[in-house]
Length: 251
Picture 1 (cartoon, rainbow, N blue to C red):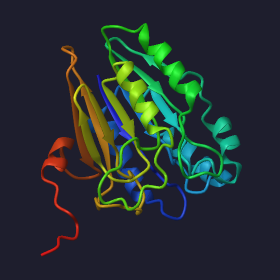
Picture 2: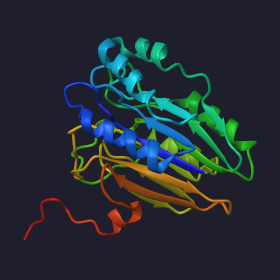
Picture 3: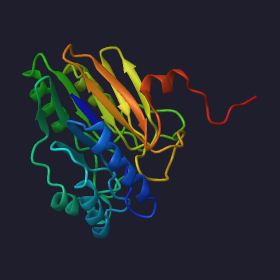
Picture 4: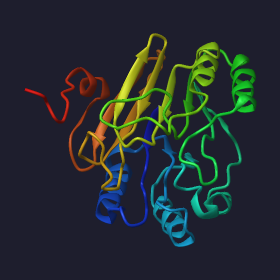
């Protein structure tokens, strides 16, 4: 199964229309994902005109399985009401042959920081406890663990410790996050946490290309995660970590 993770479109002042057009062409003609997960911040300010544009453009992505999460920018200016209208969440659990994808909503109205909450963590544990012999993927907007080149971390998930514990207890294999616009991956033994960059905006942090993640899950239940630069190369996300050099090196 091939999953594409797109994040942080930021439709508004920072949106790069030509990049989205190129992204659409790539996905529809070359990548052909079985599922597209958009991990939040579709809009920049949660405004009606931005939601209308987001709806129109996302509909151009040829994929029957689209999972769309809100981000903190989407919930600004009562955007949480518009998100429910344009992208209603009918199911937070998506089951396929060898994989289950569970989504957590970390966005809160007019707040930049994220929160999962006791009820969602408990629901995740109960939901995943009864699922066996499948790869378990959790998708959310905010990041659980800090990543380099993204400044101070005042807007991490408030209850990140509780959420990480719930993920480990539930034997989650992969967590997908957005929010920080910085592609990265952390390996916590049986759990990997993959972060996507900004797909279509100019709000770069530490990585100065628009990109998205491609997750391949094979029949032997192995997970392969690659980063794809829009209009550019594709390579393992782990390579980005292993070859890391600070953008500003101190001599």
